[in-house]
Length: 249
Ligand SMILES: O=C[C@H](O)COP(=O)(O)O
Image 1 (tube, rainbow, N blue to C red):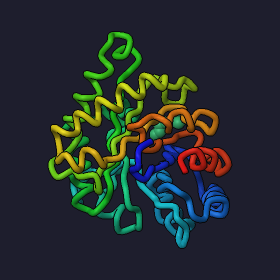
Image 2 (cartoon, rainbow, N blue to C red; image 1 turned 45 degrees about the horizontal axis):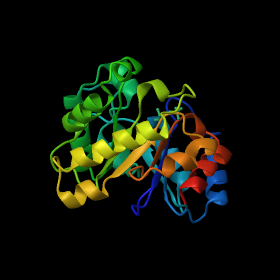
Image 3 (cartoon, rainbow, N blue to C red; image 1 turned 90 degrees about the vertical axis):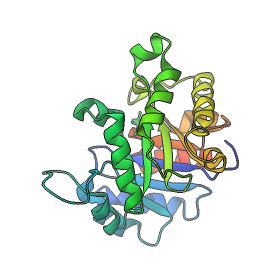
């Protein structure tokens, strides 16, 4: 980890409930002044409830997706403008589960990230190769291509976070090796320099995601160009998520 302030973001995916706000309170009580940025991203209906639960704490709240448009006839979708109005400060876009389940393309993700920026939100843009792509030796090519295709014009270190999540490591307990994470994150840092200013490329946070747990977080965070994590399963319980936060401090 470099001197960039790390971000530990938890993606609750389609999990959580009103009762789960007890985990937010427990996390805040255990980490009242964390030495890194901390964020939780619940399902959209829980956004205002979590914003209220996290009020007065150091826990930021983010959404898991947004539509590219500000409003309109898009049943079931949520605009970045509304997400911001509800008190969230970020939105995940392009998670591999959305790329797979909803056929989201790099271009669609770039449009969503642009909408997030327009609404004043941080866009957490997810990229990552499938197991078949890695086995074919295409991991770097895929990461670079998704990065270039998903990053909108106007992206800066302040409004954009990149999350590298190898698809085969998500929810599987399989973690990419430190050497593989190092190789991809280093390549992404270099690639960013062609896509934004040198200052922004150097300062943009690069998160790793994929079966991050309290027991493996420290070695992942020791990688130079890892600036935090996007955590799924282990973000649901304050004790587990707190262990990952502690490893980043
Ligand atoms: O957004 C989070 C990632 O998909 C990682 O999920 P996981 O920590 O359950 O593997």
